[in-house]
Image (tube, rainbow, N blue to C red; front, side):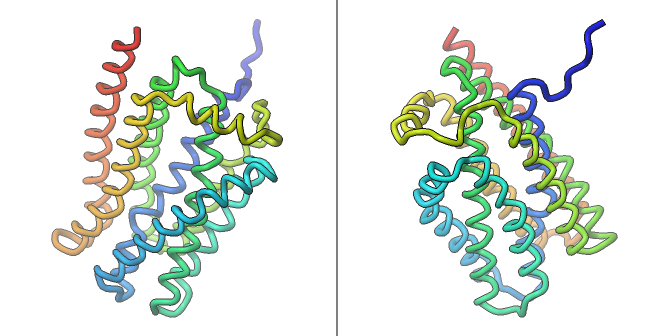
Length: 266
């Protein structure tokens, strides 16, 4: 009788990493703008927060890529849980002013790019070109499922135990989710610039389209709840229910698009 091997392949580790980290991210992220609004920040100020966060990601992308080349993607990934935890705690516990809002945006931007840079590299480096569209599709669907579960769970925890409890829980899950990547067999600790560039060039346009759909969904998942919170209902579980419906629609669109791309390439 064969023994059941858990997480015996790099794909197993990637899927577990992706599910847990996206669960942690979604558990708290869509409620951050709502908390900022409740704390007294106006909608224009919240939009400035998003601008600061996005600008930080843009500025830090080449720096984080260079840092990853020097110290390794695994080490960069391991700094994301403490940055995530500090950023959210600072949002809740520091004085309510523009400086604290800007610092939160900068820290969260650094966390975001420190997470996505290793994640994309791990996925691309472990995928063949002819399977990238399929893998992109399934990773995006996995993220969406994790997000739907996490959003509703996050609403329950924050409603009953408060935002700090939600932050602590999400931080622990994020740290646990990063651990499988320490045991990846993919050689990522020492690599050349030309190898990194060649991996990026292997991405087919159909895979990029799937990734763009995921990024668009991520933006919608942060701005749409704020609209609902202001104009429809301030009950977090009501907002989470809408997020679940958006997630189900996203899964259908991504699956159909991925199926069409798979059919086109065969």
